[in-house]
Length: 273
DNA sequence: ACGCGGCCCTGGATGC
DNA sequence: TGCATCCAGGGCCGCG
Image 1: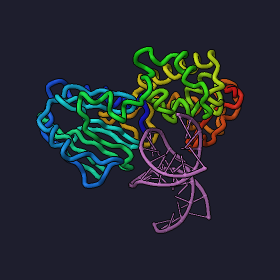
Image 2: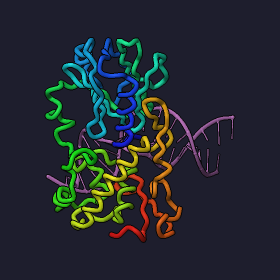
Image 3: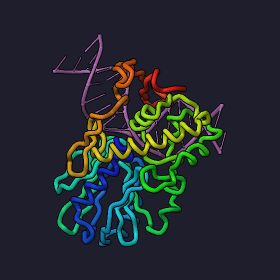
Image 4: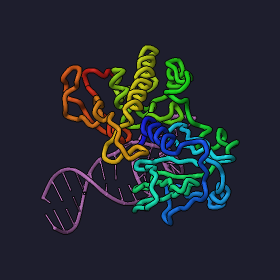
């Protein structure tokens, strides 16, 4: 489900709902079923009673900032958070709050995970130490950076920009969208990227992610914001999910095919190899 | 070191 | 209606 815009949307929704700072975590309950990775139970004991200061996002991770730890949440494909005291099938984490509310993690496929990280160790944590730059915040993700990073890389440009060590937050939907916007064929080998195309691609990635954040994310089947409402960027997708339809720009039939196992969409005329 | 296929899961859509 | 098959927004692991 969630790429950067969806996680950012969940983060903003939680900020609204939780009325931070001032909230406090009274207890954590985990379901018997394991998520992608199991959470250390000793760690869970440590977080009880800590204040909840903020909700942050790094890459596709949500971070609940406590006094001495972060609760790390990755939504996998079908993860979502909501405030509701009643529990449903596929609820896997329940955070009991001082305000007498329960913040609940729901994830049918259980590709997501939930872990506790010491606050001071975050940058050195193995899930974080290899992450690439944020594409939307800061200026580290530049054309010069992407061009240099892509030298010698023989994978397709689409696979390359979905690699979280290259740039974080770009997943399967926005990779197709950004490449279409930049006029780049998804099968172009990364090392063939020119400086000029790197410029256009960085611009396109930033633009598409910002537009999707503005729209509250893309809802295909089951993505829900923290408040339960849908995003609406799906109405503005230019190629993703539009196989056999016409390119908005030139009318050519949009092609769809898996690239390294992920469904991919492009206009064979507008996007150059 | 890099690139890729397999795999972890459930459920919805589709086809017979 | 029932059953089988395929597909899905991610990312870790092991192989070549």
